[in-house]
Amino acid sequence: MQIFNDVQQEIARKIKPESNISNWKDWKWQLKNSVKTIQKFESLTGIRFSEADRRLIDKTLDRFPLSITPYYLSLIDTDNYQNDPVFKQAFADINELTVLKTDMVDPLSEDTDSPVPGITHRYPDRVLFHVSNVCSMYCRHCTRKRKVGDIDSIPGKAQLLDGIEYIKNTPQVRDVLLSGGDPLMLSDSYLDWLLSEITAIPHVEVVRIGTRMPVVLPYRITSSLIDVLKKYQPLWINTHFNHPREITASSKEALAMLANAGFPLGNQSVLLANVNDCPRIMKKLVHKLVQNRVRPYYIYQCDLSEGLSHFRTPVGKGIEIMESLIGHTSGFAVPTYVIDAPGGGGKIPIMPNYIISWSTNKVVLRNYEGIITTYTEPESYESKFCDRNCNECNLELQLDEADEQKGVGIEQLLSDYDEAISLIPDNNERYNRRDNNGG
Ligand SMILES: *Cc1c(COP(=O)(O)O)cnc(C)c1O
Image 1: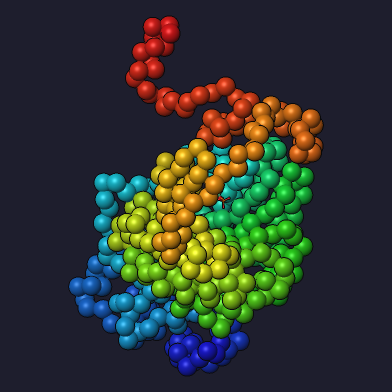
Image 2: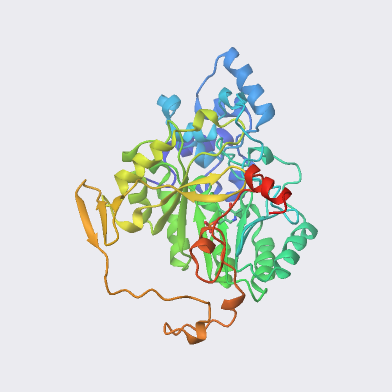
């Protein structure tokens, strides 16, 4: 697999006859020549749509714009494009115009859980910081489809400063996740400024970047970018491979540059019908990822965003995939399968069931092979009452502010130090009746 193969050479020459490998590997050239129209797509791939199809695709593009880097386009198998996982992720489908009653504009309530523009603060100790509204390739399955192609593409310094100010004033934020759009659409110098501002905040312990560049525009990973990012360790980088076909010579080179620079790499896949809804494809993908030093992090159930219904699978498909991975392959090759809760509840892990039954001294479990086994629980275990006074605890953890921390949710119910015995929905009629009776 070469970095500039025959297909890529042909595409480059169609774009401009004198184009060569150094143009091809120039990320700005790739961006400038991104495919945004049906006509250009047809002329570069040789694929032809009927007049009727073209009209429908045009209608789709009015709503959700197209953008494909020449590099990602070159991965499409033009002889069998209807079944091609790259084509399906990159090229408009008229089904995107189908909106189900259960679809939502902002299923994860990211705009609702936003204290200042650009920040989503959902979990206690970390925030999502949207630092760009654009991407080099518009994934057709984008969960933020509502924002794709926004005119104010890169937020100005003033908006970013508001986000930075929020993080500064919120001491519980120890992890800042740069997202977008794609943060690596920002220039090296802008990223340099942004990262220097964020990492200067004393309570920020780690920064993460979520980017699809290694997949759709691996040439964005340049040595000058690495020089900038390296200044801000610990920096974690998550990317988004969905299919083993996306792991090419070029993407391997980009991943190697990032791994060699010392960034822990993770991958977030989305489970997509007719793209990767297959245990064998997923197993191949996770194996190729770990070979390239990328830890599979999440598999997402496809969100309820408008226009994604043709991509969704039943949850059972994800469980079937997890069943085929856990135990069957290396633990570090197994991602966590999650549903990002509609309404903004955050990511909820989904697993096959391994606990079959339980008594006071035994747990009955099954393994991946279907063997049923028992684990006998200790008789000698003395449970300790935890009052969060860590200084007197024989586990010897000195945690000064432990007594000020509050248990949240189920953690609170399990704790000794909190008296709550149940969590009751606000609108529970029975409880409301009690309140009204002064009870
Ligand atoms: C996914 C996400 C995070 C990070 O979640 P992790 O499970 O820590 O990776 C943070 N904030 C928001 C709003 C998210 O959607």
